[in-house]
Length: 350
Figure 1 (cartoon, rainbow, N blue to C red):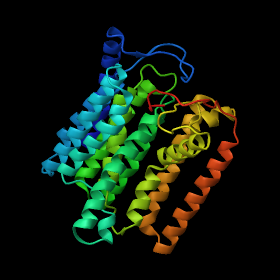
Figure 2 (tube, helix red, strand yellow):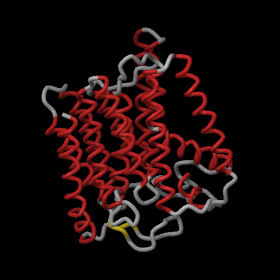
Figure 3 (cartoon, helix red, strand yellow):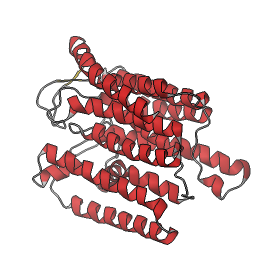
């Protein structure tokens, strides 16, 4: 099943990306250069539509007897965010609609399909624990979706990090016998890799918010669905946090950095992300992106080690990674970067 989902999504994404590129150019749906952009000429958007179609095609063709209520919830949420992102890319929506309406409503589709966090219910019995988990589900989906939306600021970065994370989610699901999660992860992997062929530097097309939010939503869904065999609470959440380590780190970095400067993290876009700071250290854009790919692979490999470690060793690994992340934030804050001088009223997708 994962192989079918991956193959179909990969081939579809490779083919559809060039098709939607021509459509974007015909409709003049392009991202223009600007002071906070790294590209020097207008770039066609609409890549998210190719990712969406490839993902849905790969997932549905791979399914057999899976719980269709959950599948319907996942596809409905993905469809909503793909549409909201497309409208935002076309300048037809206020950017806050996606953050305060689109993302929370997408999480409700997951809840309707029976997909939710299992955190507070582990130690708070009854309806109270379930209610807290519902709230956490909404926050989780919004947070992870937004983190991938702002990760889309350099050629190939969001698509590549999504592919790496999807790979490790798929491996974990296969090892644990989770057929739906493995098909879901494999479909995301194929769709992201197919698009990356045309999005890696120098990019021929951008995914836009329609693609970045879609990938973030699917990563959040995988995080909620993954149940590593032999891994008990809360180590399962540590595994998810590690697999999503790069977007979590980047969001933490810019949140701390911008808050220290009196800026709102998700409404003050600028060239102060991890990749931008690596470029300021002398790395090319390609090298900065590939470095983050490698970091994501290290995080994912560490996550796969957790089922084979004792509880104490797993907690020690998590503590070392957390301390290393905080140290990296401190060091990167000392790296020269382009600082915003005032609050910006623009999209959080950078």
